[in-house]
Length: 500
Figure 1: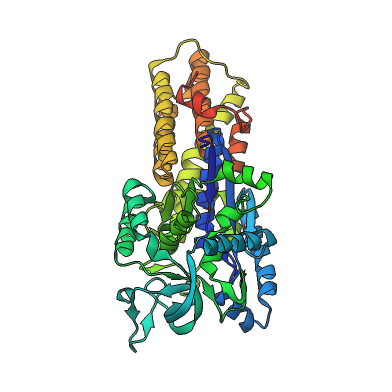
Figure 2 (figure 1 turned 90 degrees about the vertical axis):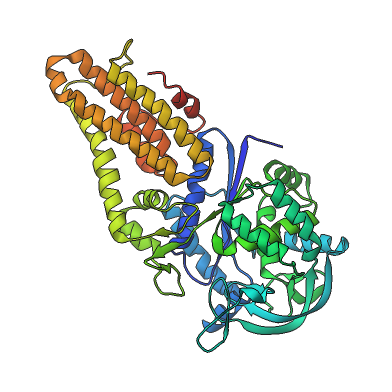
């Protein structure tokens, strides 16, 4: 198994509406993690895309008097535009209407049929159209004031459904799933999400309807075109189809063998059950390795409500970018919102983070250092043979910062890594203020040069660490102190043992 690679995915997003802050949050987190692993020298594949089939899309298209394909084709450019604006450096943008994906899903269904894991029967029960989810466990149900049944995830009304369907033998994998969870306790992060999944699987797993006969907008079911493949059977397979799995030529097999299994599937907690139960079972049935980790982030909250399109409190990423700047928002989302918990969003917090962290703490440090150096004819600083005690202490703190920062980034604890980085920035500011280089410039040129050098070395460490979050701004920061950021450089080794 190749250990020097990192394959990360976002969920693929429904095209019934433009990107919102929630989808941006997931995608920015994935981009930061992809950039971090590039920074530490790994080969990286970052996948995102759009989920374009199913009843939800079909009904949305009908309401707009459009064909489903026309709706998809009109919305996909909105995602690509927003991702480009927010510097999302994905390696592939997959659409479930891509011909290669369609062929891959049909190949998967055919294999499941050959192995005896798919059979035809009838489904009678409840279905959530917004979640594209069959509700098999009625103990989960919620009810509105009129006693109408609600989906336990999205809290919207369910429909009664009765139709012929093909089923996947999900129940046959109940024991195998439980064994896997027990052997891989870190499969789902945070741990409480895994505990919920184990409880669900132990509560008598039912076979899964894998086709729809009343929904025409989908991938034709192999051998029976009167059915389409259930949207989650279609969507989850994008993680394989995007890297050539289910392909037929040698290049596909080589690509699949190199990248699979995925290192991180990143998602919000509302779709963890599909990824932690259905997806592993599909892979077990196909005799393929399971992904290494599901990283499940919380919801973005506004007050006591989840931010969502349906509640009308979603925020347009384009508006935020225009008002505050792209990289400022990238930084805010990673710093303010704990990955493994729900997090509060407010414009006041955005403005305070930008002002306190980026402008005052980091921006002023950079501006004071470069301005003071240039004003005193110090265009080039060179390493000192020996350092004052205070300068040595900053060097040691830089090494300690990067060690902890790396550990937290490798655990995907982005907000903790940033907190450690900003603690160091404050320490460098305190060092600069205490040394008073504006005085040393007149009284002790040698010590003045040492303070400027030490501060510039600190800024270099800060710029490299912060690059995955704010790549353009950090390119500019490093350039302003005479450095060029180049991927492939052994930055991790340099910063762990800083040769000042």
